[in-house]
Length: 265
Image (cartoon, rainbow, N blue to C red; front, side):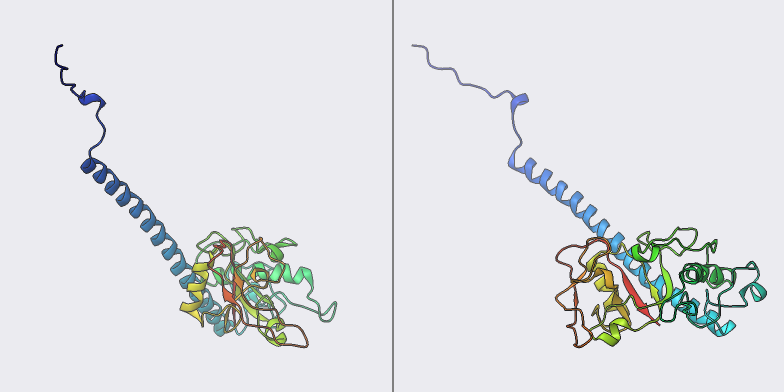
């Protein structure tokens, strides 16, 4: 019998060597790491942008108030003293942005609420406290419930969501008084992921969504009708009129991506 001839491997049919596979895995890891790191940097930059924007808007409102002795949006002589503000774009001068209860005591006049809240950004921009061009057109009914507003009317945050400055009680609290107290307040906009809004709270306040001056919006906490189906703050209990509630905490575990917060003035 003829001895069996040795079989030679066709190099075209060969697989990767362990070294080649290791190099490929390393390259893929570097690419994925770069992508993930880049995404994290973008998210971090957006977080810083929201914080800086909130501080800038707050400073602009305080500067406007110091100059004109009135709040933007509520200023009754804006068309007289601010160039570019037309007749009919004045507030009522009662010290509460978007809240006039002269028609129905204890309840805001809806027309006043929709108008003055939009005039905030017009007054600030025409007085050169913020950049941008705003039309001053009244908001639409339902905009407050959904935290929605046209970009040409309201300031937009880094997550492409509108901001509001309004006299309201949108903040979450751990007592009936702190949860329902009305004040002129800045809504920093929704669309912010839970882990980033928690970081904002730590940077700007006390890190607790139901205490301090930086708080979760009422519609974003456990036990409340949520605006977008997201649970951004959990572990607490809403206060009742006869009892205290329990402090909430920002919930990063469920990866809620559409959270909103309120800054109290």
